[in-house]
Amino acid sequence: MLDVNEDYALFLDFDGTLVDIVERPDAVVVDPSLPGTLTRLQERLGGALAIISGRPVAFLDGRFVPHEFDMAGLHGLEHRIAGRLSMCDPDEHPALREMVERLSKIVADKEGILIEDKGCSVAIHWRLAPHEKDFALATAHAAVEALGADYRVQHGKAVAEILPSAAGKGKVIERFLHESPYKGRRPIFVGDDLTDENGFKAVNAHGGLSVRIGAGETIAKVRLGTPADLRHCLSTWAFEGTLPIKGDDC
Image (tube, rainbow, N blue to C red; front, side, top):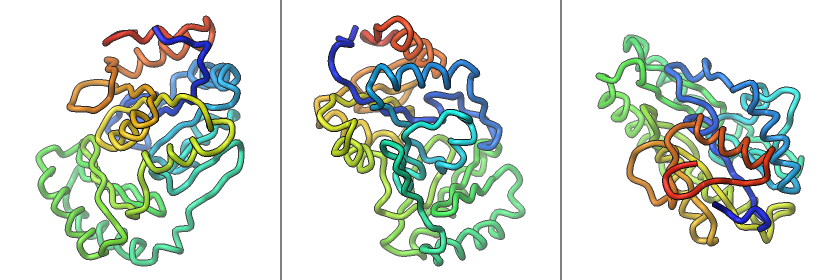
């Protein structure tokens, strides 16, 4: 059990962490109790709570209306820290915009493969067509090779995302930790897949707590079973003042 008298900064992934993974990225559902829990935790932590996601900030905001949390979207390309919002401009990525159109044509006859255009990044999903995994991965890597060193592939659960090389959850968590109200606090980061590992690395380097949701190899120090388990932990911390993370359970 953590000492809740210590000053923490809490960073939370979205898909597969706060909410369950769904077949189509636009079909995600936020538990009705979650916004209230996060608001209470935000108050308990002096504002040092942020959502760190590959989703655009606008998408996340739409799922938490009327609540407005600090967050990083698009793996850090967008962020809101202490209410100050910095957005990514898709027009600054003309080569990527052209690639999005090309990718849509390439996968047009591949049923079950979805192209998620995020403006400053693009994700190729094959959850609905697991037999097309090799094709989807090859397509993503070929696209990045064509785009050059300014872009990279970020692997996730049944998804490969093409995004600017400068993006990364570890980098944006570092940025948060250099600004108020996060500065000087012990970080906690909770995530569920490969996109979160560099976030775990950054938090571990600061002597913080890294928490992995679900199975899979990880450098996280603690593992929880499901998003529902995490929501229970967060609710207990928010409303009872204890964070009962110990070993592999909550």
